[in-house]
Amino acid sequence: MEEGVISQILQGPLRELFDSAQLLTDVSGSGNNWATGHMTYGSVYRELIVDKLRKAAELCDCLQCFFLIHSLGGGTGSGLGTRVLGLLEEEFPGVSRIVTSMYPSAEDDVITSPYNSVLAMRELTEHAHCVLPVENQSLMDIVQKIQMVAHGAKPELMVRRNATLSSGQGGVHEVEKPFDAMNNIVANLLLNMTSSARFEGCLNVDLNEIAMNLVPFPRLHYLVPSLAPLYTLADVNAVPRRLDQMFSDAFSKDYQLIHANPKQSMYLACALMVRGNVHVSDLRRNIERLRPSLSFVSWNQEGWKTGLCSVPPVGHSHSLLALANNTCVKLNFMELKERFSKLYRKKAHLHHFLHVEGMDLGCFTEATSSLDSLIEEYDSLDATKDQATPDPLRLRIAT
Image (tube, rainbow, N blue to C red):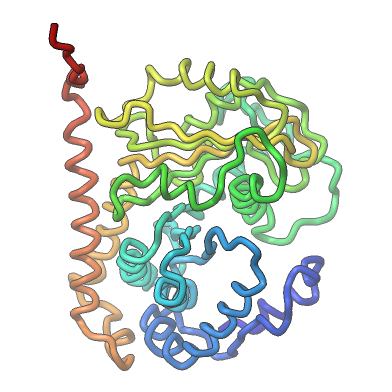
């Protein structure tokens, strides 16, 4: 729906990665309207989308999962993106669907972004196996920290001393385009997730294992991602960092790709996906070191999933991606609901959505009910945080 964006990709350095026959474009855009993307274009292009999905899937020797990467603030990513998610479930019900969703900041310049985000959230909750929420504001803050280090500011003013934060002064000196640095961070997230599918390692992780091990309840599948070290693509000659510091940083709120603090909430499960010359003993040592500071639900105290890939990122000795299924995302959802309610109480801008065929007020009601239910489910788990963990029942042998 933004043909110019696709044209830029086909003229850029990544053009060899894409089969032009698999690209589907339109020129009119969605007007920042979830209903236009989901109802109108999702219906018009349904068969074409399904045909291209099937062609791509047929080329796979071992189809582990689908990645969907989209934004929630506008109409194309939220509307058409979640329509594609539903089509994936219809056509390939047995294949995992992992979604990386870009959440808008509170100062987003799209007035209707709260509507688009809440309407899309219902689809994500119902049809995704895992969702990795990433906030634009968090990415901007991370890039600012890296730039402060690059320009000689004191990093300890922003993050702790010796943290695994790269300087931004690497071996690549080309002028970056706007948002390149932010996109690099999300790319690093996806590269770390897929490293086991591309390289050898002593503890490889299939992508379908992420949902299997980290999602105990089907609707509570929002995973908080964090990366250490934090760096952009320019940092290909970064100074090696201490291994244990990398693990500590991954559990710091400064390294989350969403504004959240998991240490203050309940963990349902956590995955540590490590790249580089790291041993299983290093993983175990750091898990034992960090465990006392983390609150896990009583019925999953050993809820750790670990992966070791032997090939590190270019220019680094090791890296870590942590995926935390944690109740802290509830606060972000509550803030989103509040922004939605401010508009919806006034019925502001609703007519843009209701004019679209197939859209009615019931869609908004169902979306808010779904979000309320999700928040309540996280609330019920948070309520168990201070309850004592009962001793496990032990088998008695009769004598």
